[in-house]
Amino acid sequence: MKLEIASVIALICCSLIVSTSAQTKPTCAQLQQWNIPYFQCQSGDECYFKWYECDSILDCTDFPDENHCQTEHTVNCEKDFLGKKTSNGEPLQSFQCDNGMCILGCQRCDGVMDCADNSDESGCSGTEVIPPCN
Image (cartoon, one colour):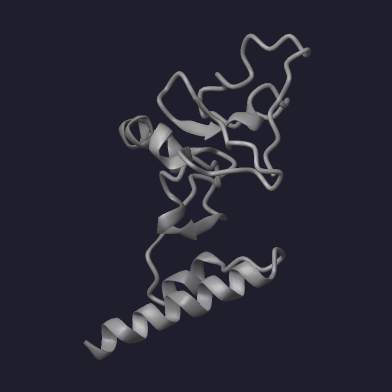
């Protein structure tokens, strides 16, 4: 029980460290040393907290953290955005990629590949009205 509590405290501390400084990201060695669940990107030099895997956000530059998550994203796409609003009170919109992954609607046709299958950028004419993300 004490070990579980210590692990939770360590997770909270690490989260605070990461969230308080955008420049600070734990290394693979640190995550392993802290005994925190993590995954390593295919590139080998990027590691992220395990809970960033299958969260509809592409963390790895080579995308393996989202490529295998089609079912999870399909099931949670609408639910995850339901009732959430932007800073100006507008409903937060989602976009479902062809592979089932779910991203913010404002990420569609923004010139950046957010879907692992690039479906968020296909068929864009450049005249789309993109909803706000913030």
